[in-house]
Length: 207
Image (cartoon, rainbow, N blue to C red; front, side):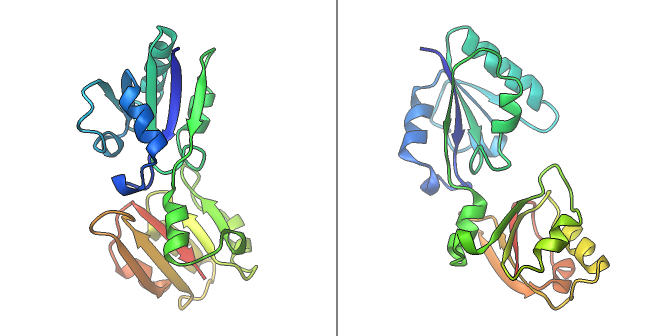
């Protein structure tokens, strides 16, 4: 039976890919995902569609069309599909097809584990596609760690907070490229974030 599987593939390393995700990928007729996501499955010789910010809607529509023709498609979402993943946009386009969501381990979840932060003792924030707003300032005053998935640029967050009189000495931890060989976890002050050079693959925790 044809179906669109929306699959969380974890933070990047295949070590964090679930058995369920691998099993479905191996049995699918087509894989759809970012270059980074598709790179996890070089041994799969089925049709592959590479998704980027410019062609996302087009690739999603092609995936849906493929399912409608009787095929099984694995739509790969880094992290978990339901947290700044592909679940929301695909639900807006899904038409009348069968969809199943396979959860994955997000970088936010791995960050909390690395820093031994219980989920119910923290605020989780995603800024993907949103940018920084004053809502973030309110969270910083409730006594809980704030775990942030940035909108690609940590400096945007740091500048915003410093411009709104947050203490430059406020403690932060940056978890960069989690699960990859060059993973980096750096403890610093908020002011020092602007002095370092981080990739877009980061999670920021403000204490």
